[in-house]
Image 1 (cartoon, rainbow, N blue to C red):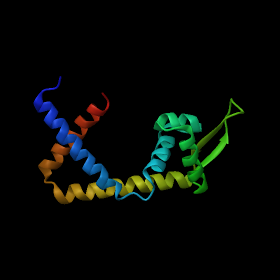
Image 2 (image 1 turned 180 degrees about the horizontal axis):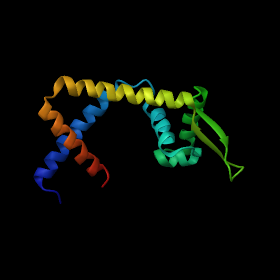
Image 3 (image 1 turned 90 degrees about the vertical axis):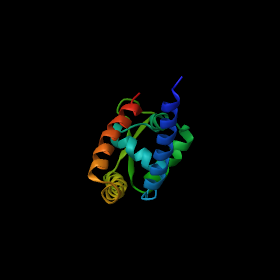
Image 4 (image 1 turned 60 degrees about the horizontal axis):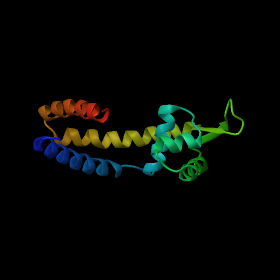
Length: 140
């Protein structure tokens, strides 16, 4: 059972992270679900639609719709699976990678500007240390 201090910190952190996440989403041009699919393909390489659905924890039918939308925008391509002729793989196109990098740049750019404008040097150092702690917690 967590201590009351740990519980209070957890509540404040969850609230602050939620607000920050929602604010950063305002910079998005690509819908969140589609950006998540592009990000998964960037991290993992070519995948089947079923593997993408499992990775994103959505139903295969929902992923098939997302894949169709992304293909219609030429952000991903489909090719034959190398070992199973019944399957196909989807992967990022050059345009998809460019769109994903631009999306990431907008998010990071806004956040970097906010950090410069709002935080002192000492606060920036503290935030950098805190980011490492949050990463450690996320990996638990």
